[in-house]
Length: 470
Image 1 (cartoon, one colour):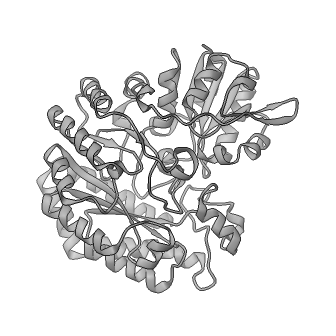
Image 2 (image 1 turned 45 degrees about the vertical axis):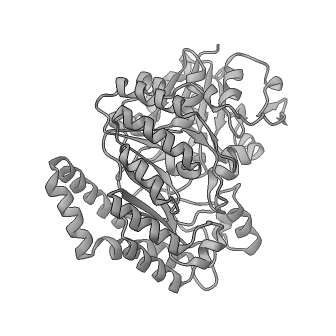
């Protein structure tokens, strides 16, 4: 095995690289996701090391000397962070010209040739699911024998054949072993999750066809390929032994509830472990399944509502009806399941009127907390192709975040300019949170828990700073 470094590279202050590939790279409050997509191949390469620079506060100056100690460096990148990540790669290559550097992630998976032409510092790109691709490179195999690889040879860009889709997900080793070895769980914060938390995947792919969603259209696919409930429960049991301080486990599958019988089976195993857990869900989970999950430790669901206008939901192929979403939300409230709802402004079909409709809808269904994003046409998605065809991209869609990492509106319509979409985010947040009912709910939460009081006050300061930066 080559001595291998897996690097989630340093970037601008507050960069949230885990979710930054799908949403903005800087969030309303300090948020850091686990680098699970890097931890997975790191678990396949004995003797490797994973450095997650942003949450650990590791600067490029501290990373550069590491280049001399390794033969292979694998860097996870995203569309917003790619220019910054290129500079990191060039700095590492300057320090150790013999270092083999590969880039992975959705951005380079859909455009490997432009990525390789961006800089001589990138030696190869691992396309699509890259776990076993990277292991074979680390084993020292000739690059021309590794499926799923694009690389440079004598000035030419060569694309090897696609790697077969991984079907038996239980082949993947546990990522919590890498978390335990290389990460500090206290460094990871998500506003709606208990702290400290641990997140991981129990499967890949999503059956939904949302036109904006990055992962299923690039590296995950639209079939939900899953680990067995036993495999998942065994990893959580191991994590409990590793991290007794962890208060919550989050399953980051695109839609954990795509397979309801399996979701219930996992829940029952988690119930026996006595852990608190949360997951991503679609706003159509039936009451029976919600109750089974609640009775076995489910605390929170992360739900993508996106819009309060049915036509916009149809435009983006969300596959959800507003009346079903209202029923689901009411069921969760009756069962005591907390919801963090996500909404997107500026989707195809958006108007000034539909923005107001979505704000009214959000205040009506009243999830506990929300996230408001701007529609982001990531390369590789149907929405990006749609935007190109219709001339919706401002500045050709070159910028999804500004120089400070704050999301900008890359889409602009004749009837709704990008500046108005951008400004509506602040309006949405203020209309939702600055209601007496919502303020009372959050204050009540803080009164009941001194820890939550401290945390919410900190998050409040960060939230107002976020608004000021915008």
